[in-house]
Image (cartoon, rainbow, N blue to C red; front, side):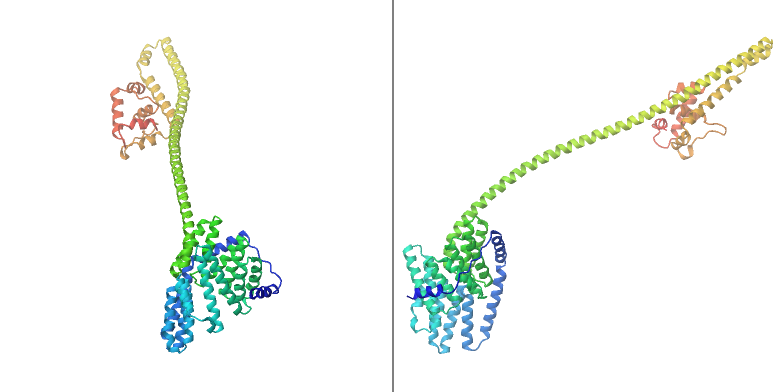
Amino acid sequence: MKNLFVLLLWAVAGPCVAAPSVSEDEMRIVLNELDEQLDRRSFYHAGHDYMLDSLKQELLRATDSWKQYHLCGSLFYEYLHYQADSSLHYIDKKEEILPLLHRPDLQNEIYINRAEVLSVMGLYIEAQQELQRIRPMELEEGMRKYYYSVYGTLYNWLADYTSVDELRRKYVMQANCYRDSVLMLLPADVDRNIVFSEKLLLSHQPDEVIDILQKSMETTKDKKQLTYLHYTLSEAYGVRNDTLNQIYHLVQTVKLDMEMSVREYTALQKLAWLLYLKGDVKRAYHYMNCAMEDATECNARLRYVVGGKIYSIIDGTFREMEQQELHRRMVMQLVTAVLVVLLAVVVSCLVWWMKKLSDMRNRLAEANRDLEAFNKSLQEVNSIKDVYLARYLDRCVGYLERMEQYRRSLEKLAMALKTEELFKAIRSEQFLKDGRRDFYAEFDRSFLDLFPNFIEKFNGLLAEDEQVYPKQGELLSTELRIFALIRLGVTDTNRIAHFLGCSLTTVYNYRSKMRNRARGDKDAFEEQVMKL
């Protein structure tokens, strides 16, 4: 009858509220936010530790027994889902203070407190023994509600803990009975909607649960109530097989747990399992690591045992994925190494070919320079040839004309029977001297036309105080004329002596004397002259 009455109350509560749907993009965003929040767990824990330290300091300073009792109660509550051993310690402190208060009725509160902590620690028999010390009908309404709530939670944990189906059903039924008792004591508020929704889920009515809790979500800002609302909503969506919304509300539950520094929880473990089933093994492994660390720190045995089963599965898959990833990395590294070796070979070949091409270019450039120099030399030779050919043709014609004139002058003397003058003219060398003088003057002019800077460059090869210049009225001196012939390519001493009409010794002495006056390498002096 009680259950029917409750259902009728809900039926007339009002129209249904459509549950909002969650997209994949929104899910990625909230999961990324949760990742960041889990990375900041130490920050939340540090804040909670600071608050606990403040309460401890206040307890040390407190002299009033009632204040000490309430401060121990606050520390018990704050440590309950954070570090169960410490929570149990402050229950013992409350029991030590109790005789000073002259309130024996508060002993029942201590029994319930201890049962609640022992349940968190997984000591279910001991927790039940504590609760069995209490006569519920002697409790005032608020304490009785607390008693029923802790007893119902104990049986829910026993149902989660056992692997025997018959026992699980038994524990679930007993938990439901205590839930009915809690419902009879709760006013029509958010807490009652949460407990009532848990009852509806047992009868597989997820849509009704979602409607109730969505309405309640709009009426509260309390973080603890919001945590239970989101978690129960996730259970409702789980019954509906709506995994996306189930994950979304589990994420919201975990975020609130993190903000309140809760270490004893089930939402993160369930979230990890759902993500594992969806193929997000890496994130599931990370979440299970966080959950197992927190369960160990809190000494929440049930969470550690139940989570251990899930963790072993996820860990095995994650290790297998790591091995596969390691194998892939090794293969990739091997392929990369082979490609690097091949690239090195290709680069080496390219460098070798580039060097070879550079050498070929250098040789080609050198050959081009040699060819240019040779062409220049040919042009110079051709120029010299053209100049000297033209001038010496003119000179030859001039010599023929002068010989003709000389012959006619002799003929005239012979016809005039001027025998003495005739013999005198024949014996005279003046004609030859004038011809040779004119010849050298013509040679000097021709040479200096071709090499106007020869004298300056030639003296540049000599020491500063050993330079040679022609006499006044001359274009080239005998020394300069010898090396002018060498510049033209006439290097044979006999030919030079014949050309200049002097002895071999004279030519040799001049050449030797100029080499000794040279500024640099004396053996290369004449080669340098040929390049002027």
